[in-house]
View 1 (cartoon, rainbow, N blue to C red):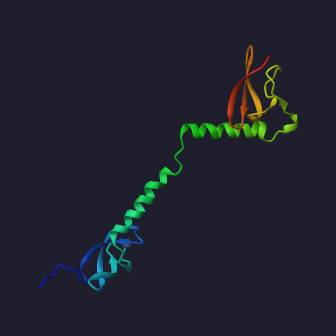
View 2 (cartoon, rainbow, N blue to C red; view 1 turned 135 degrees about the vertical axis):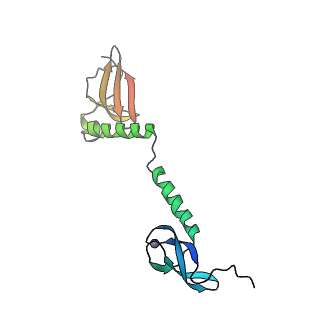
View 3 (cartoon, rainbow, N blue to C red; view 1 turned 135 degrees about the horizontal axis):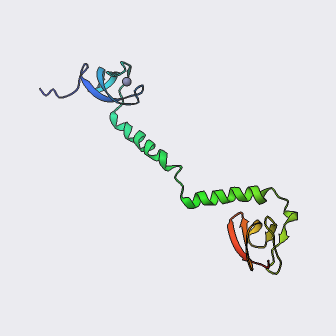
Length: 146
Ligand SMILES: [Zn+2]
């Protein structure tokens, strides 16, 4: 007679819902040669037997945790620029924007309406003929007269 099967009173590793980890359990009841009811030797709680391998899924979930907020430096830069643009131009009246034209001159913080990039704000002037404008999509250096 082979007697390698577990039986009530034996110890078995199981997932404990209270300890939230694999702990040593004492088998309280068996059903068809498998542990059905176990008692956690760590917290003393009785519960249905849960095979330890289920923790694998939990581990994967934990591993995913830090991945979710992973953003590249470019992402952060783009978000910062968008916030800056929101502050500078997002709430401004588009009617105040002057149409971009490389023949005109600009001053700092002028609101500019560009046919391709939309509404932007003049952030920097580069003499003699360039202006850096912050658009919703990022900054662009454009030609103009200063
Ligand atoms: Zn426990």
